[in-house]
Length: 428
Ligand SMILES: *[C@@H]1O[C@H](CO)[C@@H](O)[C@H](O)[C@H]1NC(C)=O
Ligand SMILES: *[C@@H]1O[C@H](CO)[C@@H](O)[C@H](O)[C@H]1NC(C)=O
Ligand SMILES: *[C@@H]1O[C@H](CO)[C@@H](O)[C@H](O)[C@H]1NC(C)=O
Ligand SMILES: *[C@@H]1O[C@H](CO)[C@@H](O)[C@H](O)[C@H]1NC(C)=O
Ligand SMILES: *[C@@H]1O[C@H](CO)[C@@H](O)[C@H](O)[C@H]1NC(C)=O
Ligand SMILES: *[C@@H]1O[C@H](CO)[C@@H](O)[C@H](O)[C@H]1NC(C)=O
Image (cartoon, rainbow, N blue to C red; front, side):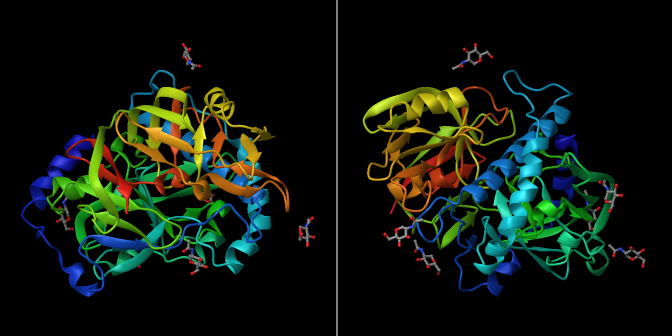
């Protein structure tokens, strides 16, 4: 299905696309291909304590996300889930997410605290702009529609298909159900999508007319998937795969520099401003739809805590998650570590002795800085702190870890389609 639609699209588009599209000239302050991303939300309060409620909300969001990813994978895989994977129930997490979100809403707004990686994309002709979460852990593009009647849409930019001369409605409906009455759903369109000077025509996306209250306080309008087609709900090629197939980018890779402030996504190459030395590439197994790198090993200080496991690199997730047995084995090596919230899988350790956690995929060793591993004191003035690695079964298999922001801040990341690899490089 993907191969068919994309080969038709490339026949049409190969001639139409310029190598260096026009949007570049309207953003002269940015190097070609770069898009700056707003500040990243932290799970640490201003007083240095761990924002436990927000962390529970983020855990719920991650559980829902992988529930949905695996449902899409199953659907696209003839109804069968790959061995070792299972779809985790989400109702309980869903209810919690709602309650916490209400409490948290005000503080999120007051602090103008962007809770996801976001940057601006344009859709249509003339261009309509949207703030999106650039997400390597999902594969669909969706933004709100001008026909959206949900109150969650009121604060967001909305796509008006009628005012874009290049918009085309497609058959079918995009729909993500959240267990109860709530959903993210709407009609499917194709239109021209532009990101950081790279234009893709006839990109499939959904303009959603129902937007779950889960997204009401989210600062972004929608999600921009950078994963592989097998987890696409739209059963369409994501933007970057189309950009590569249509020769709209000079290099078949995009790169993330992630920091608390001044983060950057670079489409079609790497930005040497942010890294030093060689880029170490590791082959990706994309059969499950993810940027999944095998043969990782994790150390606590000098001691190897777990070897030969898989890692999924997810720019749309805040912390790191692993299967409970594996995470326990890791914290067993951390002096003074104990379970701090068993329901949510959080562990603590003495604040004056933040563990030095590092990963290797067979080459260099990349260490997580204490600031990135320590989520803050378990309560105001406590002497124990919460760790950025949580124990949670997301259904990804008993030896797969999900590495979000807390990991990604410690290396420059290159997501390469032509090498079918993720590259890690030391930060400058
Ligand atoms: C792409 O969009 C153009 C302009 O709307 C249209 O003429 C063409 O048929 C589309 N191609 C495909 C493959 O949908
Ligand atoms: C576009 O215009 C038609 C006719 O006025 C209307 O029925 C339709 O709802 C509009 N669609 C959108 C997306 O605004
Ligand atoms: C969208 O929301 C309306 C209520 O506002 C509901 O009737 C409809 O079933 C929802 N659609 C989907 C696909 O969830
Ligand atoms: C990030 O920016 C915020 C607001 O501009 C500032 O308060 C904070 O110190 C910055 N953080 C870092 C790590 O530079
Ligand atoms: C934490 O310590 C500060 C200064 O030592 C004190 O003012 C504050 O009341 C303490 N907070 C709690 C919750 O104990
Ligand atoms: C993972 O699950 C498989 C069966 O699915 C089992 O054989 C294996 O021992 C488990 N590994 C760990 C580390 O729990």
